[in-house]
Length: 344
Ligand code: PMP
Image: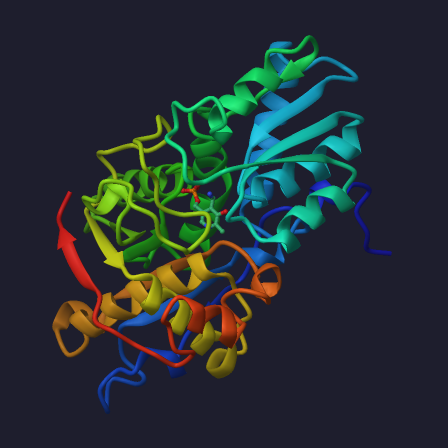
């Protein structure tokens, strides 16, 4: 018989899927490089990449004594980290309270409630220092007795979980042949942990470096913005989180909401990959990189891995809804030019 005793044993070891139809590479570049491989994180049991950090952060807090039996986990989260934490918490008997900005879809909030968590919704249109901002509300709740705040923005176990699991998986799955790693940046945990692991392995073997490329919504600080609002969820910031290691990314590609959403829809229709808007954003950046490399000697050997953080199921009333897109002036098949804004 083949089975596991805990749902937590099913976290990680997600597959790589080759993208093909949506890359629009020139004729003749079909079988050579660049090879673009998507790491499908929605296959984690909680439905996103965040299952990985939830386990690692909770286990570390238990070990350090910060989280005691029967304690309450309080976290500001756009949903996925909440699901991961709620899942692990349920398995271990903790209570959860999540604080979400109001732009987070109702579907996502309902998922958290389904796991038995409490959800507090805060306005997006206030500064981080405002008493009602979701950072401040969660600070107040987490100062209650028995409460523990993982703080995915500053918790070193966030990038560490990727350094210890996702990074090694990608290296092994590509037999060390990965040349470029692309992912969206929110807390910075994914890019910093995976990026550092891949760069260390590349340095160890004395071969060429693995280039690490961040994808970022136009308006966010990582691509030089001031934090002005954008619609894609889970990525981009209006401040620099501690989990983001500024020495890792070789380059940041800025992607507009329009391109992110149009490409998310293409992934569903042309690759049968139903993923969220931040996955569409990252895959669009990977496609842009592949187009730049195609037809060059570097491009022939290029193995680009792009991480797709979550499923499209949480966004059926948004990205996959024509009326919702039209309300913001986006067409469902619309494409505009995104640009690279700089090397960091
Ligand atoms: N995409 C989604 C949907 C997310 O929820 C997150 C996490 N905020 C990310 C991407 C970015 O990952 P990270 O926080 O590790 O930078």
